[in-house]
Length: 318
Image 1 (cartoon, helix red, strand yellow):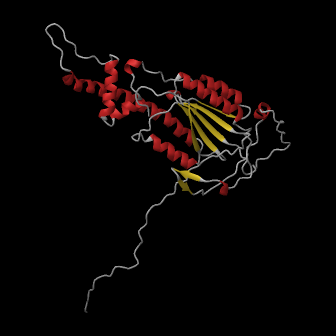
Image 2 (cartoon, one colour; image 1 turned 60 degrees about the vertical axis):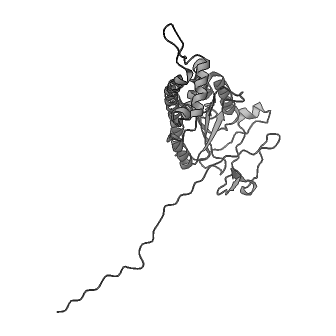
Image 3 (tube, helix red, strand yellow; image 1 turned 30 degrees about the vertical axis):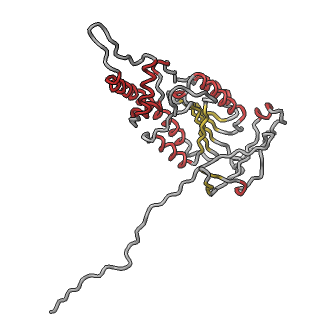
C-alpha cells in the first residue's frame, strides 16, 4: 500500500471578525408653551431641532404627550373645572398615559437658605405640575426615606413629607473655609496654585500659625516654613475631600436606585434632583452609574439648582 501526505489547506471562507456596537439615545422632555403660558398642541418631530455644543443631533424618536390640567391647577388659574370621565378603562390613549416622577431632595448638599428655595419649588411642582393619575415619589438623600403617592389623593401627604426633609450641610466658619472643589484639586490633583491660595487664606485668618520668635528661640524665616504650611493644607484637604466624596456617593446612589425603581413603569418617567450642587469628580463611578441607569430605563433627569443667584465667594467652588 502506498500512502501520500499533503499539507492541509486553510478554508478561505473563515469566520468574519465581529465588533460590538452600541447606540446611545438620550431622552429629552420638552414643554412647549406660548407667550401666555398655554400649551402648544399639534407639534411634530420636524418642528424640533436638538443640538449638543452647537452640533445638531438626530431626533430618532418622538412622542407627543398631552397632559390635561389638573383640577387644582385649573382652580388656581381661574379655568373651568375639568369634567370627570363617566367611564373607566384600563386602556390609555397614546400620549395621555400617567407619568412617573421621582423627586430627590438632596439634604446632604443643601444649606438652610437653599433648602427653603428647593422646598418652595418642589411644593409648587406638586401643586401645579402633576396631573391626576400621575405617580410621584419623594426621596431624601440623608437616610434614603421614600414616600410614594398617586395624585391627586396623595398630594397633601407628600407636602407634609416634604416639610420633614431638612438640610444637612452647614457652612464651615470663615477661619477654616475650604470648598469641596479646592479640596479635590489639592488632594487629588496636587494643584500648587490652589494649595497656595488656600494656604494664604488660612494664614490670614490665623487658622495656620506662623512661627513667632520667643526669648532664646528666634523665628524661622518664612521661606523655611512654607513647606510645612503646604503639608498642613494638604492634610486638611484630604479630610475635606473624603467627606465630600462620601456625600456625593450617597446622594448619587439614591438617584441611581430611584432610576432603577422606574424600570417597570410605563409612560413618561422623570427624576428631579433638587440640590445645592456637587463636584463632578471623574474618579467616582457612581456618576457613570446614574447616566447608564437613566438611559437604560429611558428616563429624563432634571437638576433643580437651589442656589439661585449668588455673589462671588471667597475660594473656588465647582
